[in-house]
Length: 137
Image (cartoon, rainbow, N blue to C red; front, side, top):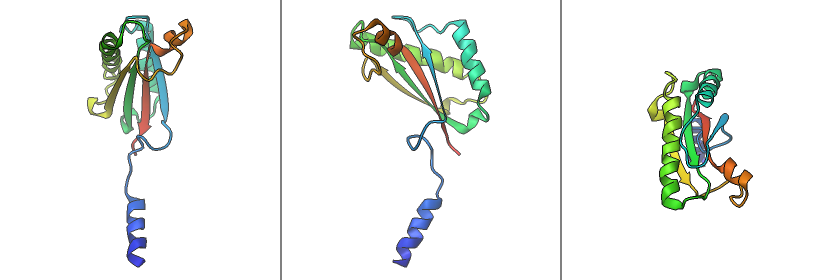
């Protein structure tokens, strides 16, 4: 029993990575036009300003989730999803405090939609990249 208590105390004191546990610290979405992976200069400036507002951004793991609507089929949307995530990652790496190793990419394409793709609004909202920040220390 005593050794079980010691083991529990040891594991309770180990550092943990916040990713996947609890809530993310920050979430930012970048939206795209249909069939496009282009991030406008205005959206790019807004994203960089957002990054500058995060204190100690180097202390975060970043998960990039890219999505598409369902127009064009799965292969097309897989390529488009990857292009969108790479466009956003390029902007993230313009911030000198963010390292490529701190970014994890999940390209969903047309799978895992948050909104209903049978409506114009839903398709528009699904054409996005979500940038999720998880505090690591």
